[in-house]
Length: 439
Image (cartoon, rainbow, N blue to C red):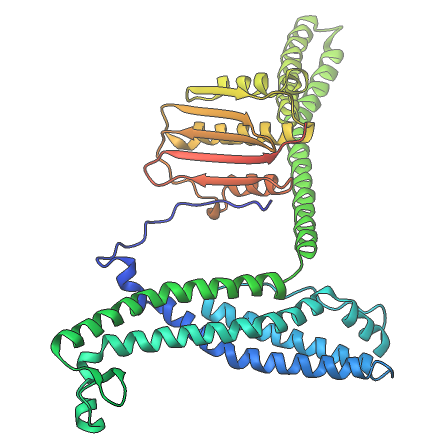
């Protein structure tokens, strides 16, 4: 499950005309028409190449020549696949990543042929060539017919004079035989024809949208990377996030120890050394210095406890999320209403990430929200652990600006979580985190 966030976006401009009336003139409709019309020649060329080369290669398999011919057929299909991905991206705004590259086991022709023939992506491109051809013929015929007839009939009042002037008949012939003919030539029939054309014209964009949706599914399913490859890439990215996050946490702990407790312990050691030297000839000063050192010890212990609580609080380990979230909710400067509904405790990793996420979000509310009240809800679904925090503050939280919210999104993404931010200016802010449930 990919991590994502939804920053606030301004509402799109409202149009005076409804979508059904705007659709025939929108750029998207023209792009989809162009895709349907240009798809046929590409599909014909791809189909002819595929059938010819596969048939030739299969016929030559009795000799070794058939193997490189089949490989060449698959490589040609991959080339056409790149063209189709580019066409879908330009006209349909369907962005499909290139499939996994060929991975020969070594240099030379034979390893390359083996990589081509063993590549599942190559065979998916071949399936696309065979499946897309009949669909492209259907899409081309339907799109061109509806578009042409729709605009022709809609504009019939503007050009019906062509028939009596140049064709010697009253108008479009609706019916005719040896004894009788019916023409659309009077004002009522011309108007009715234009209205039928209007229906066709308004229907065509939505028909095109349905046709190109199928095209988009074919391109995504057959010309892109396999699900396994996409999953491997996602896991590699998540692993990098986990490593970076762990390194950042270690640097933070080292910095906190160096600047806080370690510095106090060094001062404490120096103070005790001076007190030891003064113990015999100035016991009063030595006693005062020991008292100051005692205060330093208490402060250092408090800093160490705070640091340990930030890493993994003892209350979380001992009593679970309910008690741990109650503790951080009481430390928030904004009143927080807490609701926890969990049947059992989740896995320690999920529990720790949930606690860390809630802690960071409540700190953000304290520092930036100017809210009067907040709610924190934690509940369980059959497959997910849901965390939602809402506040009535000023809003405007946006992970895209490089804030700590982006770091939370990456942390959740490392465990296949989802992070959604809804924070319009003026509020309210609603942040939802979804983590996989692992008991």
